[in-house]
Image (cartoon, rainbow, N blue to C red; front, side, top):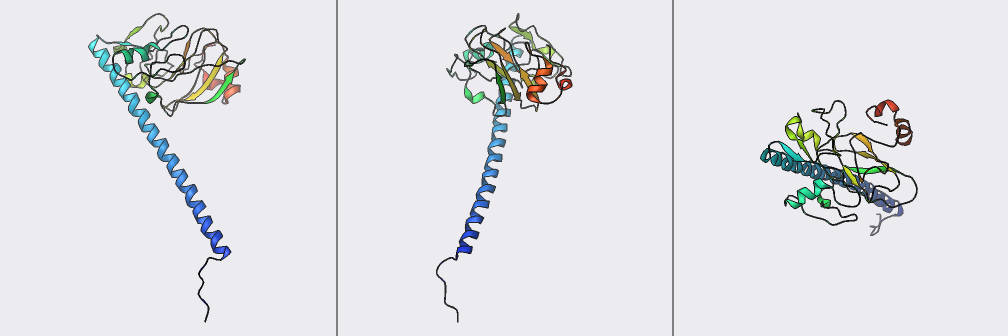
Length: 232
């Protein structure tokens, strides 16, 4: 008759720890996916809300909307300030005086690659607005002279919702070193944006200045053909 054991053998202990480790890895993966999906849902809800705000405003003002336009020097984006001033979004004072709450920063709109020329600190802000410089194939194919006009006609856009999926980056001044960001948008687009000291704001809309398509392809992968809408 074998005696009863009151403790684990070494092998059993290793098996037990292995099961715990595998379970922890599985749960970690599940939690990451859950957070990602929750972030996407939040992002989508925020985009829809801002799109609805813009559409409602345009309806009240004969089809015009206040767009996200460049601001020279250090200051808030006009689109974010407009939304806050009208009580549509909360204010959040940040580096550079941003006027849009972090609540509206889309989790999917993340910078995952960056080139910085020279050493300097560049403050960035991601927000939302209507695309003002469309790429070929964009709904409406509408181009706004965003450096001259603060208002554009909302009725010219065939699918306004599609124009609420881009980000802007606010920099601290017009003479800072060039920084290139390559970002993934909620639409699945992978676009680059840069202004080489020509403006205080750059938008991820496929229109860039101060960098060639060849260098963009070399820096971020892909081919020059993939960036055919970039204006050098």
